[in-house]
Each structure stands twice: as structure tokens, then as C-alpha cells.
Amino acid sequence: RSGVLRTGHCLIDSVTGDRAEETSATVVRFGRPSPYELAAYVASSEPLRVAGAFTLDGRGAPFVESIDGDAGTVLGLSMPVLRRLLARHGRAVTDLWVASRP
Image 1: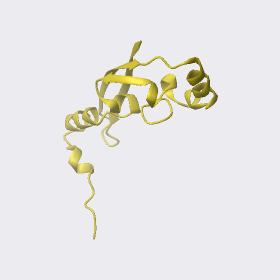
Image 2 (image 1 turned 90 degrees about the vertical axis):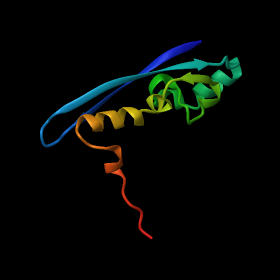
Image 3 (image 1 turned 45 degrees about the vertical axis):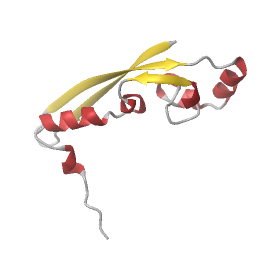
Image 4 (image 1 turned 60 degrees about the horizontal axis):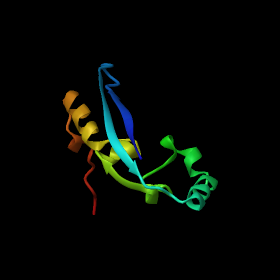
């Protein structure tokens, strides 16, 4: 069992109003939870609080066998996409980094 999860990204320059948009997609392959596991997962209410009814970093993670694509797409923000969108606005992702202080 698998599904394709798509996440839309839009970066808007608040000064000029210029927009850069991109959609990313990741294939998610699911295992076969037992009826007990499935009932327990639903009872946890996690699937009611998250997009797609599962997460890679929560209680649903053990039921995900593999992904083909960027995990950030599944989590909600693809860093490679963010880097490309920033570049379209003439910025580097490193511009967002803050130097740590001793």
C-alpha cells in the first residue's frame, strides 16, 4: 500500500509582493498494521490531528515502511524546495542562518 503526499510551498516577498511557488511529492509506503495496532493508533487521536492521518515522527511512524522522496515534504516543509524558492528571490538559505554566540 502506498500513496503520494504532495506539499505546496509559496514564498512571498513582503516588500515587492513577488511570489515563488513549488509543489513537492513523496511516495509513502505503508506496512500492514494488525487490527489491534490500527485500533490503538486511531484511539490515540493522532490521526485526527495530522494531515494524511499519519506522521513520520509520531505514533504512526512504525507503520511507514519507506518513503521515496524528501521526508520534509511529508513533515510539511521541504528544505530543498525552500532553498530553491529563496534563490528565485535572490537569497541564499544561508542568509537565514544566525551565528551562534559564545
